[in-house]
Image (cartoon, rainbow, N blue to C red):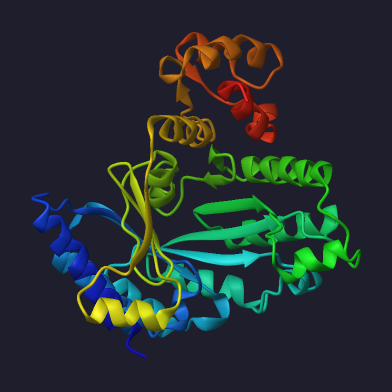
Length: 353
């Protein structure tokens, strides 16, 4: 019931840790409420958490403040409160517009509620992003096209389209193992990615990360409508996660909080770190992440930042049509359209795996 108060206490704790380390607080460039369904909390509690972040650290000019939303758990008043509190952007987890696909994904929202919620957010001047997932067992190419068409009809600023990843231990993984639903087909996922990219491009969107597109809209450029928060992850910048199970990364150290809410709460209320594990990333791990994440963004990777085996791989990747030749000659490894479909293979070649 007091989750927002516990989260605010952890924000204060984070500030105290930095103070004790003699590290001056840096204003926040991004605040992101996600990792589940934040809009199940009353909007005023989300506003209280944002207020604490602003009090403890300050927000940088033009800071991005995003809230993930389930279209069924928001009202017009939700967006009134969030906009007044300083939220700038809402990300809607739609996944699909097709009921039988949502049923396989065990998503509970009603597809018709998505455009209504997106409209409410836009009316209050909030940026809007819609997430899709392709490759769900039983999803036809026409089903996928229907979902992309539904998103384009809402005219959001930003779209994410991720291929379905089957996590071990999930109901879907068990159904596939038992043969009740078909396995995910990589060729089917490639066809759906290509279709979405063409439809989004025709609607004025430009890719800026393999699974993310933005466009000029609502007085903001495509660049301004990118997700600053996700870009921070892809560039391996620092972030501090708040809440049960949250992960953080500061100065090459990664740590993660207790997952269970009760021990998390007890620790935070006692003024003790809720972290349950940590690791210091060595140079090799940091390099692997630099390549793995950096190759996925449209700005690409500086060729000079690659180790010798990576630089040697560039010519072959250009010959295969997976890296852009002129960009590489100018010093940057950038995926071609074909290369985006093979991003994992490109990563392995650059790392000589």
